[in-house]
Image (cartoon, rainbow, N blue to C red; front, side):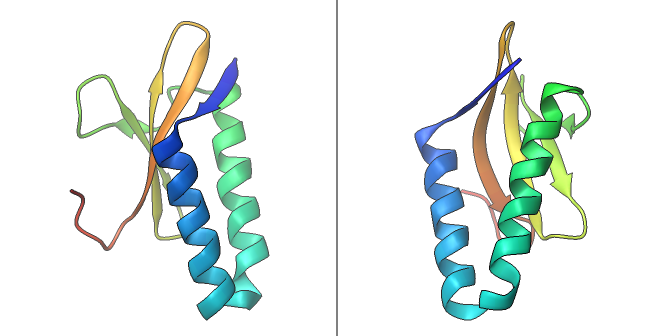
Length: 91
């Protein structure tokens, strides 16, 4: 199954990378790798995340990281919609 990052999710990932580079550089590489590997794991088990807040979506909680990956499973792809920080209010 193909993984497709939406522009919004790609922007979220860039923002996370920038924040970590600036404020927590020792955690940047391991955090980014964990996010990437977690998203890639959806290829094998696309429905492993919990039901999402929006209809038709799922959410993968990245324990112990403070991030939640919102995604939608389609017939032949998984669309990564956003990466939310668990402590921030979603808009």
